[in-house]
Image 1 (cartoon, rainbow, N blue to C red):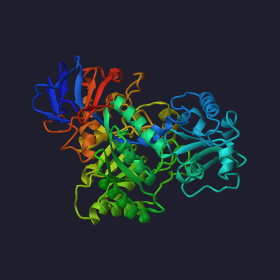
Image 2: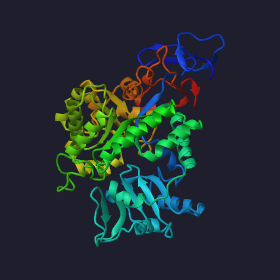
Image 3: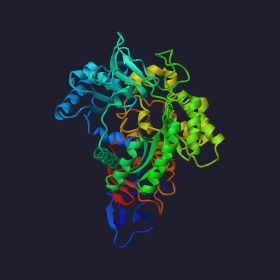
Image 4: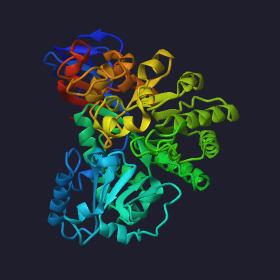
Length: 524
C-alpha cells in the first residue's frame, strides 16, 4: 500500500484539528515520507472513519439478490416489484426479499392475497424492515402448513382474519421461522457476494468496522471465505445469536467457533460477542413493557427470554469471556437486560466486559442511572429518533404520548457518564452515518419539517460524531488502535466534502463521502 500525505483541507483527529495527515504502512505517522502520494482534500474534512455498532451486513448484502422492495412507498409498488423479480427468475423455487415498510398497511398487517396477485405458483416471503415480521403469500403459508387450526407458537403470533384463517403476516421468531426455515440455503458464492455487496455499501458511507449483531453458525465460514478471497472490505466482529431454548448447548459451540475464527488469522474478522434478543419491537406490539400497551391494554408485549433465564444465560456467556450485546427496546426489556448484566457482574470475576444494550428505545427513568453504574454501553440507532411515519402511525399510538416522549434518551445518558455508540441496524434502516448524525443533533425528520421532537435529548454534532467513531471503537475494544487519528493508530479514515461541525445541522445529510480508507488502503 502507498504512503499517503493528506493536505489542503481540515483534519479532525477526534479531539483536535490539524491541516495535514501522513500515513505509512497503513498507520498514521508523524510526518510524510519523501515519496508519499499526495491526496488533495479540496477543502474538505479528513476524520476517523465511521463504525457501525449494530448492523446486519450479511442480511443487507443478500437483499440485493432479491426483489428490490426497500424504500417503496405503496403496497402496489411492492407487489409489482415482486412480480417483476419472479418473472425474471422463473427457476427460483422461492421469492425472498426485504425490507418492506410495515407502516404501509393498517397496524402493519399485510394480506397474503395481495402477493398472490403477483405470484401464486410458488412461495413468497418478505421481511419487514424491522426483521421481526414477515409477509407471505398463500403458497408460502400452505408450504409451511399454516392454516386456521395452527396454534400460535410460544414466541410469535400468526395474524388472522376475523374467521381465524391466517392473514399472511407473521410476527416474531417462532412464527416467522415456520416459513423461513423452509427457504433454501444460499450457496457459499452467494453468501460471499452478499458480504462483498455489504462492503461496497459500507465503504461508500465511510464505514470501516461493523458489529454484525446477528450471526448464525453457518455464516462464520462465509466471513472467513470472503476474507480469504479479498472480498471482505470492512472489519467485522461477529455476535452469535443465543437461543432461549438451546443456549446451554450453544455455549461450547460458540466458544469453538470463536477459536476457529482466531485460528484462521484473518485480521478483519473477530467473533467475541454473543447477541440476545430481550424482546421484540414496539410497532409490532412485541417489545416488553412494564405497563400495558395503550391500544392492547391486556398486553405488555412478548419477552423473548423470561427475565431470570436471560440473566442466567448472560452470566454464563459472560463467564465464558464473551461480550454480551442485548437487543432491548421496551422499558421491560431494558430492565431485564440491566438486571442480567448486574447478575453477571455480581457472580463472575471482574473483567473489562463492556456489555452493550442495543437500541435503548424506551427506558424507565428509574433505570437510567444503572447504565453508568453497570458500565453498560448504550447503543443507539440515531436515525430512529424522529417523528417519522413509523412513530406517528404505529409506535406513538401504542405507547401514548407520555411514554413516547421518553424514547431514545441520548443526551440524558451521556450526561450521566454513559458510553454511547451509534449504529444503523442496516438493512432495518439506512446505513449512512451522516443521516443519523443529522437526526441525533436535530431530533427532526430529515426534511426539517416541524418542531424538534424531545429537543432536550439532542446531541452536539461533535458528540454525535464521537458516538459513530470513538464510541464504536470503545465498544469494539479497539480504542488503542482506532477511533482517533493519533500517531501509530490504524489509518481508518473518511474524507468528507465539508466539516459537519461547521454546517447547519439540518443540512448534514447533504455532505458527501469522497473517500474511505481501511488501514491505509482506499476502499471507496
